[in-house]
Amino acid sequence: YLSKNNKIEGYVLIKLYDNLVEIGPLVTRSENENIALILLEKTLSELSGFNIVIYIPKKYEKIIDFISSVGLIKETNFVRMFNGPEIKMNSIYLPESLERG
Figure 1 (cartoon, rainbow, N blue to C red):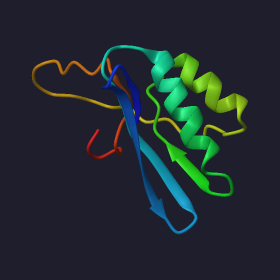
Figure 2 (figure 1 turned 90 degrees about the horizontal axis):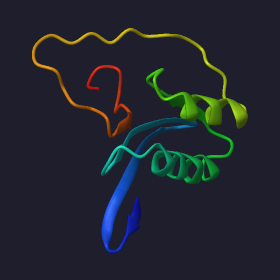
Figure 3 (figure 1 turned 30 degrees about the vertical axis):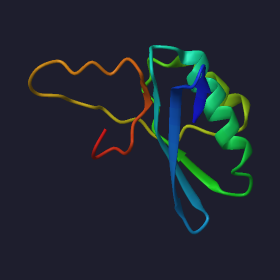
Figure 4 (figure 1 turned 45 degrees about the vertical axis):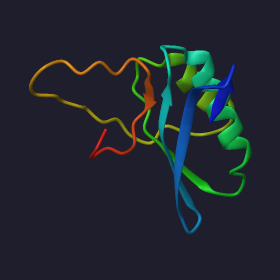
């Protein structure tokens, strides 16, 4: 997690399966893509040698550019659909999984 003035500004979780790591969720306290990038960079620096899976909404172009710059490769696209009232997710940069968002 990343904190400032004794307040958590954001956090990221990983799920580890043998040599595969799934990164997410990555959540920030406010809509701040720079905090998300700092958390992601630190997380990736600890995961050398693992196969990495990350689900990134396409609206986060800086995160996608960063991921590409460190050598990760896009494998596929997914479409997310919602039914019901709009869900405000501006501070969720990486979902927990495809199934749970």
